[in-house]
Image (tube, rainbow, N blue to C red; front, side, top):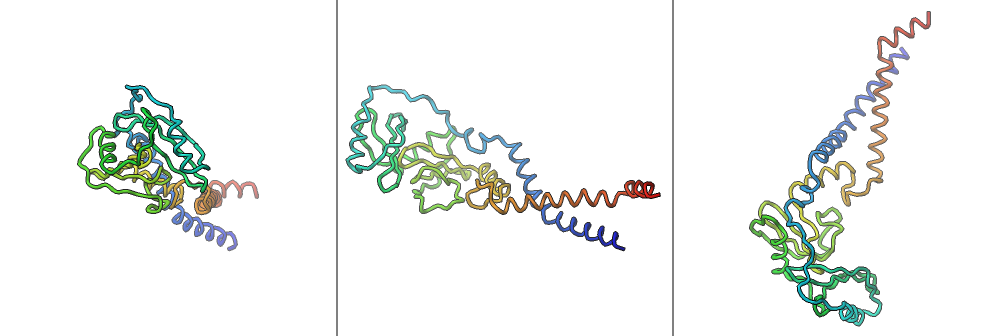
Length: 251
């Protein structure tokens, strides 16, 4: 009777644990299948973008010192964190990343020809940049200006340069153009959204998607180990061959 009760409770525990963890195992398997069968270039939309060519300097470029001096006059405590040469619609610019004395960050654009600062990218410019950045652009549906305060931790453009213009094309394709640098920060399509959803279920991080040390994932992993262990235990205690062998040893 004691052995029977032991097996009964073991079967019952394994059954309910299997149902509980089995749903998550299905999500993990579906995610793994999608990740392994889908090209990461297609997920990121790289196959939709025009290949970036080297920046062609057709005229002499000036030193960025003029732009750097202008930035420091605006904020004496500004610290230059990055200086790059970028291209916006055929014209070269210095992209200057700065951390201000109040800890805020931003980027400035300065024309490489004379070092003079220019303003952020406008909506018409963002639309042209987005169109020129795609191999086969469709019709633009809408354009929206976004700031960091407008998006949450789970937004598809999370952890990217802000503010930004989002240019939406037919086919549910979003091209994000940084308002400060004039560069395309991300291309988001249906493949990426499916990937992001499955990755969320994979990591069990429903906000940032990147925290693989969260307690929910740890808990499901431990339950999975317990479920598998109970399955092995149930196999051994229910094995007729094992019972016959134990009987022969007892004689």
